Image 1: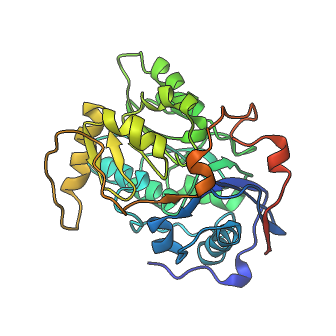
Image 2 (image 1 turned 180 degrees about the horizontal axis):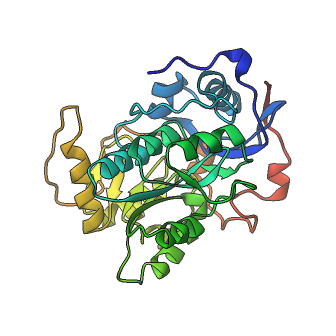
Length: 330
């Protein structure tokens, strides 16, 4: 693994908004601001990556700051690390699929660049290794240049636009046919748009639904059209999408294959997996183990989930967003 960037050189460039543990976070040159309280009290994956046992606004702020300092997140000297970070991540799987020739293009998202199409597995992994849901981002020329040097194509270099539907259209126009597209939960309606585009029999599109901690009931009809779904910390997805699965990968943060295409590609990924596995059949899915998986905050367990705000990319109303619950100077 390459050495992390030096702290002195990790200067945030532009303004970015992401989701982390269900919190909406704004990252700018002067501050990291947690705009909403996290939905998650504990996440085993977050603890493994950042050492956080109990998640609150301050710990979210700290973990984002750690990504900035250690990996150049949202910085001009962003680290492009090609080593696998999690066992069953979207970028890890897409990397293998590209290297095995099972797909010829991936449409993903990178902070500092927006929607990106890539044909090299290592680039997809380097982009997505430590990424969480990017709501919006600002262009960073050094990040864009690095992506293009590795053969990637940025949808809009001037604005760093995030639009997975337009990214798919660009990939199809470039002659790609077998394409994997990642779609974050807060953009779930894009999955339905992608399926309409895929009506062209010459195209073969796999949709990987990611970053789903905050999804609501109104998103389920769209997410159900995906091929592969990461449940993140969502109880709704475990209950409603998990029971539709043909295959489940993992227990702590389960990943569900909803189609034969998704199932075949997951099995192809597992054929290259370097660690020991246990595979068994079950009468029904989802498969759960008590005590495994993220723990939601008490207020979120009984709270009825509302429809998303009209604001593109966000879930929270204006009053909620205007309240900064944690801030860290950078």
